[in-house]
Each structure stands twice: as C-alpha cells, then as structure tokens.
Image 1 (spheres, rainbow, N blue to C red):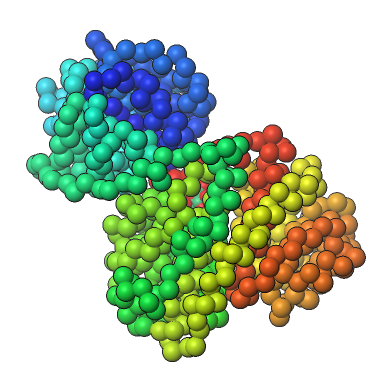
Image 2: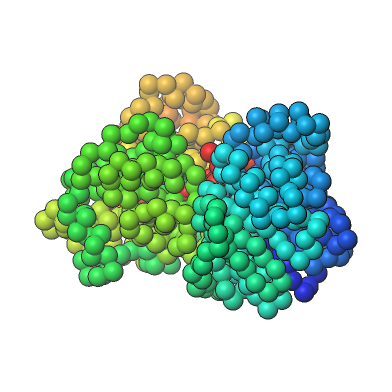
Length: 589
Ligand code: G6P
C-alpha cells in the first residue's frame, strides 16, 4: 500500500525516481509525486498514475524522494499527494499514523497550518519542530511519537547530500549501486541498480549518502546483513503480453511445479515435519485470495490427514481473542508477506504458544521474520493486483502440507497424487482463450453468482472475488446448497451463474441447484471434470477441466474462472492489472 522511492548519487534523481515509481505502481495509483533537492526543495505532485508526472522528468538535482499513493486519509487529489513539504522537510510516507489527530492538534496550537487532509503531513511538521541542526536526532524524536505504521523517506533542505529513512511495520529496502544509493518499498524498484540490498526492520533508521548507507536503531548504530537478489526475477517484464495478469496465468503450471514439496524426502523441512507429527490442530490466517487458499487447504488436510483445521480472516482473528489450543500449528498465508492483518494475526498466534509457518511468495518479507518456519511459494514475482498464479502456488504448498500431515499421522497418502498437477494445469492454461467468448454473457450482467460445494465452493469464492476485483460487477460465491436460503431471490432472467462441479459425491446435489437457478431464468456456465454433464439441457456453456485427486481440484478449476474475470474486465474497458481502489500489498489495517 503506497510505494516510496529515494535516491542520492551522481546522476539526476528525477528519472530514477520516476522509473522506480512505475515499478511500485502495483502498491497504489491514486496520485503520485516527487521532491528533488537542488538549491531548495522542488515538488511535482499529480492526481492519478505515475505517468501524470511528466513535468517532473526535467527536474535537476541528484537527491530526491518519490511516492505513489493508495489513499487512506484524505481523497485522492493533488493536495493530498506526497511528498508533503513543511519548513525544511519533505516527507513521503507509507502506512497510517493512528495518533495524527492529536499530533496535528498540537501543531495547530503552535500556529502551524496544514495544506492536506492526510495523516502523513504531520510528520513533516514534527520533524521541523524537533530539528535543531541534527536530522537523525529529529527523526528519532519524531518517530518515537508516532503510533501506527510507517516507512518514511525524508529530505531536509540543509542536507543536500543525505537522505533519511525510518521503518515501523511498513516495508523498506535500501541498496547501494555504482552511481549512488537507493531506497524503496520493494526490491523491483531498485533491483536493476543495486548490487547490495538491505531490508530495514521495525524501529530501524538509515542514512544514505552518495556512497554509503549507515543503519541505526533508537539508540545507536547497527550492522545489517545484505540480501542476495535474483535480478532476473526481481525486474518485472511483460514479455510481449498485454497485461501482467495474462502473463501470470500462463505461468501457473510453473508456479505449481516450483511450489510442490515432497516433505518426505526434502530434508530442509525435517524440523517442520516433526512439528506436523505433533500437530493436533491447524489454524490458517490470511486475507483475500490467500484466505481462499486456506479454505481449500482445510478440505484437503481434513480429508487426507483428519486434522481439524479452522480458517480465519486475519483481520478478525487479530482482534478476536482467539483460543489457541496446545499442539496447534498456525499457517499464515500471504503472497506479499507484508499484509498488516496477517502479520498481526501471526504474531498473536505465536504469543499464544502456536508454532507459526509462513506460506509466502516473498522470501525477505516481514512475515518470514515472525514465523518459525518459512515455506516459500515458487510463483515468482506477481505484479497484477488480482492474484492468480500465487493462488495456485499457495494451493500447491498447502496440498503438499496436507499430504505430509497425513503421512505424519500414519496414513497411506502419497506425494504421487500431486505430481500430475503441473501438467494438468498446462492443459487448462492452454484453453484460457476460450473464456473470451464466454465473457460476453457477463459484460452487461447486473450481478453474477458462483456456486459449488466443498472444494468447489472454494473455487467459486475465488472466481467471484476475481470477477469483482477487476470487472467491478457485483458478484457472490455461494455454497450451492445454501442458495435457496436467500440468494435465489436475486436470480432473474438472464442472470449468469457459474457452477463448479468436480466432486463426485456431491455432483448431483450441485446439479439440483443448477436446475433451480435455470428454472428462474439463469444462464449457467458449468466448469466441471465430468464431461457427461455438458449434455444437460440446463447448461448454456461448458468448460471441461481434467480430473485430479478431488480434494485438489480448485488448483485447476479456478484457472478458467481467473480467465473469465480477465476477459470480462477487458470487455468492460478496465485495466485488469490495476483495479480501481485496490492495491497489491495491503500494509495498512
Ligand atoms: C490484497 C490483494 C489480494 C490479496 C490480498 C492478501 O487485497 O489485492 O490479491 O489476496 O491483499 O494479500 P497477501 O499478500 O497477504 O496474500
């Protein structure tokens, strides 16, 4: 949520900042701005995307900061865009300052005036007030007063060669390259430029000059370990695709193959397997798409291992006073590893005695620092805001855990049942284009319903979320058997209903629901691994998917639903990679 960049070096800062911001736009794109220090601080800010900052390209100066915003406090507008300038200081901020009203009150009392409605502007005011010739001291004093979350990059008029940074619960990385030093919310913004990268932890500060980076905590200097980066993976490229979402769907088979783990033979995970042997309960905490992975995992773990699993929306769990029974393993599932609610839920579970395993696509993320075990999904970087391949990759690891957990409980379940999944996914991905014609039914719909039972219900939930996120159509994922307790009232002539049927035991039950919606005029698209169902008269459109072990089927059945959402989004004239109001990495509550 919000992307920040900073640079100090020998080259002109503005083009470097703009390029970095483009790579961070997945974090928010309501407004953007840059500040450059060159005989005083100059600022260009605009409502809208980073591309609106054209006039900043020519700015002189070799030190600067930039920001792409996802609005929390104050509407998306030029006035509320960062950087915020007050007195000697310009500041960009990612996070939320929860006590900003009290702090602002104090500043107003001193006679200061504010030019935005944001929580962030107060930081520039506090810095200016605390400053007595030492920016680091002012930054320490200011950050000590802030409650909430922040990653900050600060320019001071009196310091033409130094950039100041601070982190508390919002990600921040820094790096050193040939032409200077760099800061950003995430690695891709600076990967190309840096040979050494460091990640700040909570409570840490950094001071960058043209050559060096110095790290501090609240009392003194500290040393930090550099991180290895895989440049090819960290620099996103469209590779001829029109959108990242389309490219990322093509990468699903590889994401699955790279994420399956045979825990029985992979000795990197022997300590984790020991914990699985002792585990009597599993809790899964996650948000959004990752929450749906958790629901899918529950079906597989309970079916194969008979270990009870509860799945929790992280924002509910963290404030819900959860009961963590002895011998509970908590799986915190998060693509980014930075989702604020998932981090808080994982911390709470740990403080209540659970082992915590992070299932994440981001090896250096905050979640990995909280967790006892890190299970890294091999999806590769995902840029489109709507998750696709990362979901399939999460399922691959979670299903691997289901198999390992079953084996830990002495059941005869083999990893072999997972091996065919990448090739089967390849078959489904090769037909993604078929969804384009089917999206015509959805484009003008007032609302769309997705139904299924058991594991199919989980695919329905994720299919519905995808459609909602990028087409802006009202949509609901519903258990097929529950329809008649309310949602059936919403079905009218022509309402599109997408039914997912891959579970033999409940197939006919879901087909009953299909008959019921058809009787009320719905137009049904069936996604199923039972080709014989295509002949039923109620079915307007049919998408076949290959058979696999039934409890793993969402990993395949979700793919046409992701494609349907993608083509519907395009047909409605939207940008599927950057849905309105959303951001990929939700680092605020
Ligand atoms: C945002 C993204 C979703 C994602 C969710 C959880 O809402 O737009 O695609 O599923 O956050 O993110 P995480 O990184 O924790 O998986």
